Length: 141
Image 1 (cartoon, rainbow, N blue to C red):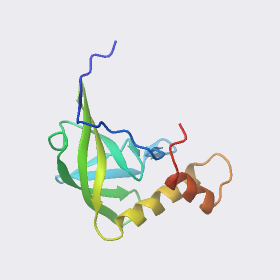
Image 2 (tube, one colour; image 1 turned 135 degrees about the vertical axis):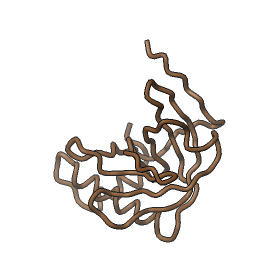
Image 3 (cartoon, rainbow, N blue to C red; image 1 turned 180 degrees about the vertical axis):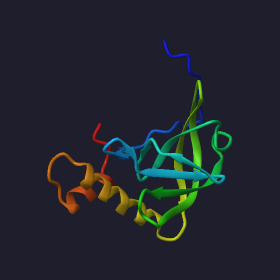
């Protein structure tokens, strides 16, 4: 039985949009930088992300600045996120976060990145329009 402890903020993280595993062909492709530390992203949606970390980014329900990066792309998505939950584990834990705000066109850039990610990881041929609809639409699971 898993002995991890889960700390959750009120109204725990329950994204309504599709989450995407932040890997392509087994390699991490999305990264988050918090307090100058670059961490791999576990999953990502238009609403938020989760990432492994040694300790919570901020107190539950508090905001913190973040920088998202897509491997091989020089652009970044900057903004603020709020901590939603933290699952403790043997080597730290996993932080779940919800986006609070984006700088500039960050929300649009994130949508574009996820659309490209869906197209490039699809096992069947998919159009850009279909991929964008998946990214913007409700969770499929």
